[in-house]
Image (cartoon, rainbow, N blue to C red; front, side, top):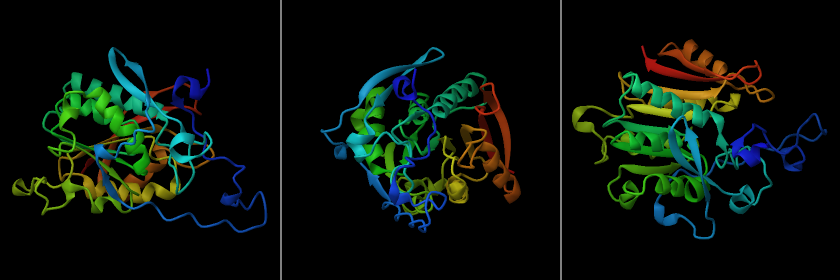
Length: 297
């Protein structure tokens, strides 16, 4: 079964036939600069287009059933079935294996009393379908904020998927500020996240708790060039000192240089956080997937 038939994304960086990417090993022309990232903005449910409707399919996660939407990359971005076009589309319409690994790990952590999501402020970075954030809502988180690079992903996939999985909570989406959606690049999106703004009425500034209790991310560390901005965003967003990050990723992303170990190396060199491996999935060395937990020292 192909990746598209199963609904799970196999990693392909981009379409090598795209002449605009200008690779020096294919021709002598200098590479064109990447386009500027899209503006950072909050996306609200009223912006969901009626022209693109996801096809919903059940996903069974060891007895927990969630719904996942399927939409066409062509319908949303007018692109062929590419997983990633740098600076334009970052693969948010695919359901990546790491997202499922992360939900399973969170569930295991909750059932073993290593984690409680009740009353927590949660941020999911690079959310796509948003399944880890949806699970957090089901477990009683007080606020869940979904972030993705593309506003189109939030409009056409994330918000419909949240509504489908949380029919009762979705009735008040955008009204009580508990479930919110933010688009933007990791180097800039902190500027609009409400839990980081001390003058925002939704932030818990009276108790000194600025930031998020739990940050979730799956398959976000594939690109070496974005690791510093991702790590910088995490440090800006985590509550100090009790905040925690759960990260699911492949050990290595062959051909693009990133991976969980590359990111953990960055974390360890910085010396501010401590990382622990809590789950490993897969057999061969080329397809090992991991889930890590990060905390402040």
